Amino acid sequence: MATMVTFHAHPDDECIVTGGVMRKAADEGHRVVLVVATRGEVGEVPDGFLSDGEELWERRVRETHAAAEVLGVKRVEFLGYRDSGMMGEPTNDAPGAFWRASVEEAAQRLADILREEDAEVLTIYDDYGNYGHPDHIQVHRVGMRAAELVGTPRVYQATSNRDHMRRGLELAVEMGAMPREAVPDVDAQEKLGKPEAEITAAVDVKPFLAAKRAAMRAHPSQISDESWFLAMPDEAFGHAFGIEWFIRAGHGPGITETDLMAGL
Image (cartoon, rainbow, N blue to C red; front, side, top):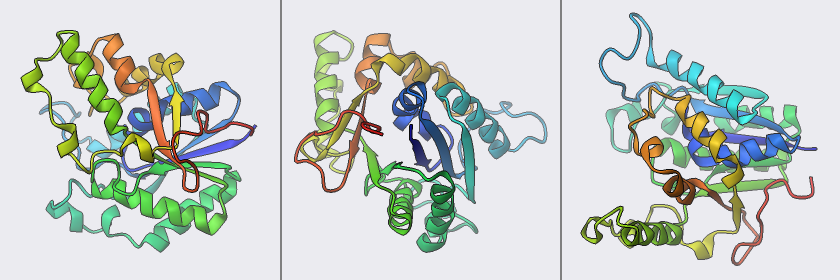
């Protein structure tokens, strides 16, 4: 058995991006450790959602632990940085913002955990943070450096498959779930995910979708039952979230792996 450390920017990212591989690894007897860079301080919630005197970060930390339990996580750690908000927002420059943190300092914090856990596998994000959020980009930078410091054998960069998105949108049109004129131009979103040709690992997590969806529901401050994530029919949810995509440097071309923990 082995240890997977999965590194994320904010509470709820873990279940959306890697919830399937986390639950899969846990069910196979591996140790799963979740590390979150920030406590999601600048997320948005409806008026009246929080209790009197309650801070959003407090709620999001509790939600993270609840989701982690669903996903079979054995240890949850927060690196202690502040949510930077979306790119270009004043919060990017707030004291303690992850986006402005020293990569070397943050990498040392993550490296300490990797050493303690003797982790064989680390998941981070691709070089554009999947969609350009500053904290996601920083997760990539910090994660790559931490793995270099420790010599982590397997580093997987979670991403989205742009070609798979395109196929899913076409399927939605064919099923009558979306009018063709409403289909967004995936190709115009050049920095959203990666082309399939650049992806080296595709993990089928359909057997773990119930846990993945339950983990999303454990984050009600950010993912309501009316959200796109939870409101879609099971078939559409399966297409959108039933495969988790990764890039592993030095592997490929093409998809050569289907299990991040294979052989461990």
